Structures are given as C-alpha cells and as structure tokens.
Length: 293
Ligand code: HPA
Image (cartoon, rainbow, N blue to C red; front, side, top):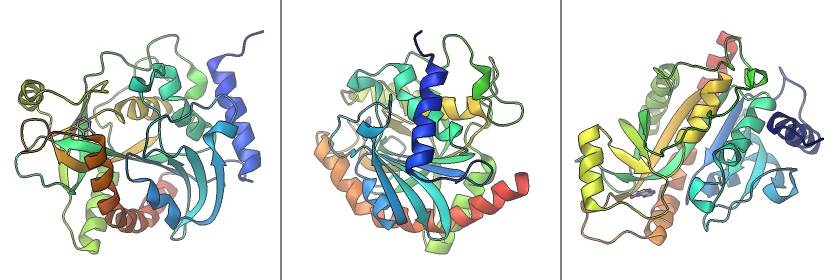
C-alpha cells in the first residue's frame, strides 16, 4: 500500500532519531532552527555536531539553491540542544506545498516545540538598512496557496489543542519569543525592529509596482519562504520566532538591480550577529518552554 504523508514524516523522523542518537520526547531537543539564504554558517557554531545530509533522509526534499547546503546539524548552540536545518526548500524549486513543509513536520515529530525561522528578505519599510536583522511580527501569505489545504491530519497535533482543521493565526509569531529576542538583541548591543513579512512564490524578484502595492498592504519585508513553515508549525502547536535579514532594499527602492549574489553576500556579513543573537536567545527560549511544560 502507498505510504501516507504522515507515514513518510514518521519514517524520516524515526531515521533521524536513530542517526542523531536523540532521546525520545520529552528529553529530545525542543528547539529547531531553519537557516535561510546565506545564513548557513551559523551551523558551524554548533558544538558536538552530528550532521546528516538531506539526501540520506528517507523522503526528504533536496535543496537545489546555491547558498542552501541541505543538511541537518544537531548538537548544542551555547548550552542549548538544537536541531538545525542548514538550508531549506522552496515552492519555486518545483516542490509541492506538502514537500516544502515536510522538514517542519519532521521537526515536530522529533519533539521540537519552538522553531527559529530565519530568512533573507528585501526591505520595504523606509529606514531599513541592508544587513539589518528584523523580527517578524506577522506575515501576509501572498503565495496563492496554503500547505494545510487537503485532508486534515490530526496526528500532527503534537501539542495539546493542536492538529485542528481550522487553527488560529492571531499570534503566529509568538509574542513571548519576540520579547525574548528583543531582550537578547539589547544584550548584544543592537536594536531589533519588528516587521510584517510578505511571502511571494518567487523565483523572480518583484517589480517596483509590486513593492509599492505590498507596502500599501502593510508589508515591510518581502521574501520567498518562511510562511509555509510557520503555517505547518502553528498547525502542530509549535511556537515560532521569525528573523529576517534585510539582504537588499526591495525592488525600486535602492539604486542597484537585485541579484542572488547580493542576497547571499549580505547574509554572510550578518551571520556573526545572527549567531550571537541566537546564542543569547536560545537559553531564554529553553526556560520559556520549560515553564510551559
Ligand atoms: N524579494 C524577494 N525575496 C528576497 C528578496 C527580495 O528583494 N531579498 C531576499 N529574498
């Protein structure tokens, strides 16, 4: 018989649990991190790292984008156990919404209860500077699809009250986690603005007219990822902290034409700041999760 999507997630999770030698929940790492374009080097700061390339994991989609290496790195960032996804897959690569959210489902099945989703984004708001990190306060789904369409799978409700057909998105990006991130940034000596991330399918960058329209809609950041993962995470009851790196001013706002090279280069310049922020915020997140348990 054909395996269901849930079965494939369970098989990938069982494989990783064995390969990463993870304890069963509730002792498994509770925090997952997804590293976006050009931000992958943060994984190099993981201590006692066990690395598994996506290609070795049953059913796992492969990243085809330069700057996305495509491997799981499990270990500790500072003192906090984490499962890091170094590289993600996108709709524009030809993956289906279910494939795009498969890795997030696997993190849920492994016992992850909070995720940090990072991405490269174009800055729309006036005053954003290239290289700035911005907290995602909310999002606008401009993809034209939702990965939750199709039969509901209640077994993905890994937390109490989750796995519902209709689920709340009023606080998609956890207010508590945003406060912890703002505090961590302050301790690191920089301020974190909060923005609204609008997701487009890509792969083309936007036209200046589209950017003006998105600004009118209330977006301050634009990118091609994160929103599907947030939707899957919230369906599972996983808390989300979203962090965008403004790798470029959005189309029509800067003097330059946009390129993937610029996006990747800026990402690389910001990696150290991001690693510092993560190292500070993770213990706070771990304490927050313990209090909730
Ligand atoms: N638009 C869409 N996605 C992006 C951008 C952008 O300007 N920069 C980085 N990812």
